[in-house]
Length: 221
Image 1 (cartoon, rainbow, N blue to C red):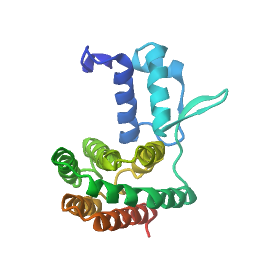
Image 2: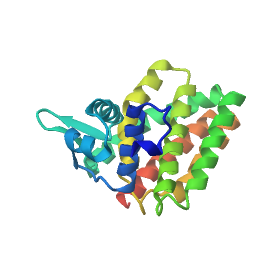
Image 3: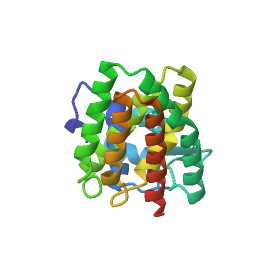
Image 4: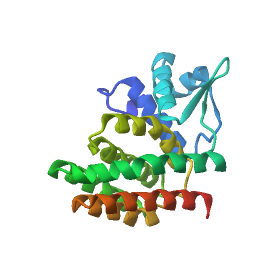
């Protein structure tokens, strides 16, 4: 398994990527147990880098650790959790988009445009191919993270970072056929356009509509 990766990449980083790919492909499903001993034998690596990788995945919200039972893939979100996450995002992300629009720089806009372009390229394949889903997941995460970091408020950015693990869990368990990437792509473009023109109120509203749209698509409403 490890010989497919660059020898210069730390083993823990390799294992993080391997496990994340398995989550994205559905090879390891929501709620599945992650026994470190079994993983060590299966992936032919020692347990130390696996523990490090699992600890990092726990921080993202994609893996959970239970006392005396070890790790498992995070369970699917309940409808109540999805609604609560929506409410939290609506309190935070429109403000982040508003403030980012007021502080936009050429470098920030170039990076944000790249994430919009990559997300758009993923849209057709996100619901049918693991690679497409991977691109969708990463570009969506980058888009929202860039906006949070550009807000200029370190405490709001930290609040988003604390919430981002659950947002990643929300994305991951959308799964094939339910990402809504085709519908989300123009929503990203609308947010970008508002930020690029410095229209802070329009950026906040576009972000609000995007969050409502993403939640509605996942819940089928």
